[in-house]
Length: 67
Image (cartoon, rainbow, N blue to C red):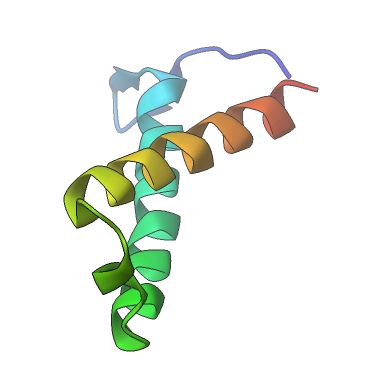
């Protein structure tokens, strides 16, 4: 896939911003799922853990789309 700017109503948007938004939506769903079942209380620093999950999700999306 070629990562080129996306024209969004006359404004050029970097593709990484769209991928970051998609990763945030996936991470928010995973965070809600983990909070509902109480899994976040088993980690040392929940905010740091959620940030790490976000980075993993974002990296996975980029690697999948870059093929």
